[in-house]
Image 1: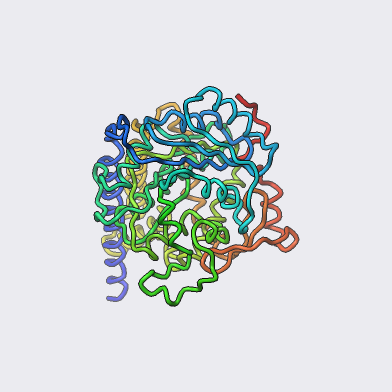
Image 2: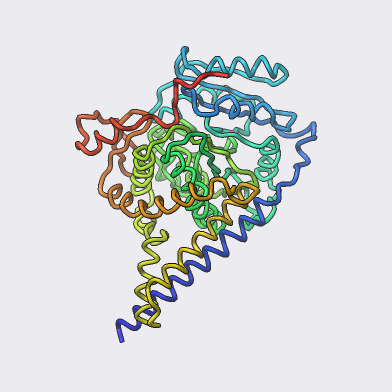
Length: 449
């Protein structure tokens, strides 16, 4: 009886997960991302001012087009601030070329970082953050390209206009963010793995979590928020209503997040928990250009963020394998075989057919077109490899605390804070990963436009 009950529970659970994820991800993606109307703010002369902050380091893949998409925004009231840590940064000639091409756009270059923590992106951003002319800030990673209507539609959402298909309660929105949609411009299989991961598994989970909207979940590829809101938080995640318990020696505003590796999610979480504000997705995507990435790079990137999440949302991280196709297929095949005498191969074939069809539907919704036939088999190989690698990567990642980011070694501490460590403090296996990483988002020998 106990085994029969376990089988029934497995069948019901698998069916609910597959059907709920399928209906939630696919229907929400269709409603929101296949309809991208032009915002009235695109032609308004009274639109609120926005400061676009773009921290740069080296020649990222597709850098010229990524940065040019910022200049091409259909919006009448914005400025662009580029920031680099070094005066000889290779991105500067491209920035100066674009400034000459678009002289009517208000633009500023800030050279030199201010070290306020271990996070180099925050160190690079802090001067831009302080010198921005406007309260609304749009922080964009250098490997991201956006549609010309993205800014106007995003300000619509930030100011209170619900996007098409939105199910988020109409509380004040503090962060508007965009689902990353990747495309690989390199032939390496690791680049295709990253592209497939972001456009299927990551997109499904990201959309599902933000549709339910019971907890903060934000990645920092493309985020809009108000500086006045950021200045009120300090990263403790303690609500202001009980702030008498807060350590006032901690810095507030952006400097408070220099101690975190995942500063983007921590900023969003602080606005959610400390101020009681909410986030929303606009109907745009952040087109994430994946450069020269090996399979080792892909694995280490997944390891890094699993280890960061482990220290931020431990229970949720432990449950991640149960959202993956391989683990669910094992549970489903066992349950249906025991309860209904259905051969495992039938369950597995049906399971992966549904899983793949949902992933292809999400891809089509975000891309605005079906997966091109020319890359179908390459995509399928990367999709299958990613699914098979997910559990081994998770098991390896969950056992450690060290990560490597942009050539530096860190140890992840409580709540996602990090401290620098030397390579000699790492195990031989982790030193191997570091030695064979090519720095996939900084192909610095790429020719400039």
